[in-house]
Length: 278
Length: 284
Image 1 (cartoon, rainbow over the protein chains, first blue to last red):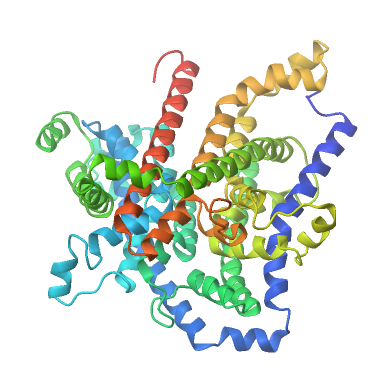
Image 2: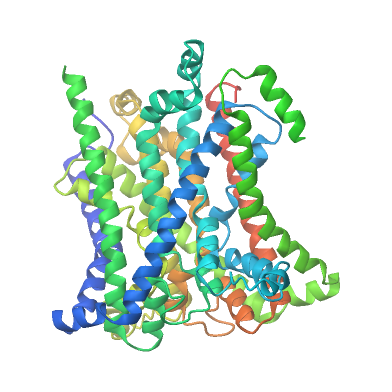
């Protein structure tokens, strides 16, 4: 079969251009991170990694991620169920609302939380009187991260669940299945992949959020520095190797996420081919 | 409205979980999204119109709008071309390392923006790996609008690739077979036969890349350098005002940023809806 762009010359030029651009724009930065981190040798790398502020930043980043991802997972699933399985007034509005964090600059996200919970904010006085600190402490970082990452799971699930329709779930209801059983046995197997992808994206953004967190964290070394803030602070201190050591950890996590997705895609592709063959 | 919604849910719905999912969703949206956004409105309502106008009309801010729009525009155009090329190559051809290249396309979403920012700033500074090669040619990327556009382009790479790729995959082979057998040359056939199918996805992806670039912060500030009137992006202006405890000024600028992104997002959604309607013969 003849298809557009199948001539060997066209093919070679297009693949060549694509590979060169990918190497320049994506691969080179990735390589540079590790090269800069290891510039002064492995010993210095380990030393930088076991620095007490870096360790504290790793701990805080883990805490924030562990608090954020489950909350957004549960919310994303319920929201997707709500807007794809029921028709009610305000459904469209709700869908547009959850796109806000996706569209808005992370600095604005940080700002609105500062206006609400900060010392001069609406709830600031009350929080102060009760000695509860949200801004410039870990609860503020968690809240800002939840805000920034809340659309990802829902955005992956909604188009898929809309396309799949509710017929199978409705059949399950007529057979007398309970809500939880329907979700676990009928819906979950159909949305597994999208859910997984959504969680990976949420996780990546939660680990790496910078703009919103830098507004609400106040960057107190050893206390409110997450890993991305640590990268910034070391970089501003002209400690390039130190900055890239922390950056290399984040890059490793990013690579891990990409490999997981690629491995999953490969498995699915193989399974699909086996199904077609049989 | 909520009570009404409940009534409708009870009347017509077979599936369970309406009340629970509505409750959880509304609680979450109110606490996490609406309450903080109301505080922005509250802050703004303390300003008179002339104060507001004065705050958003500062010449240094106007320069930041210009450089942000310029950077985001260039980044979106670059990504339209690069994304289309990558989607085409990944769908239509087979070559060694294809899976790896495909996986790399998601890197800008997975890599924290601050990491992308310090890396690009290091690579393109005058003694960096790339900057060193460009300097003799008289091209400086770091601390100019070109660097801003570059960083914005990097963080928004996945948008066009990932919106065009599935559409191209679903395009039946007969579409180009017909064009080729009728004797059309490649370039012509692509423009007249393939591109019309990809157009909606391409515009949506480019639009999303543009919106994302307008708001990008972490990846841009390091390579931009933040010279007043030259390389200060609007997000950075908000950040600087916050550090000076100028909450009113920061809120005024934030309202402009928020309104712009929302209008663009709404426009993209409407455009997408219109196309889907047309494809399904007038039914939504």
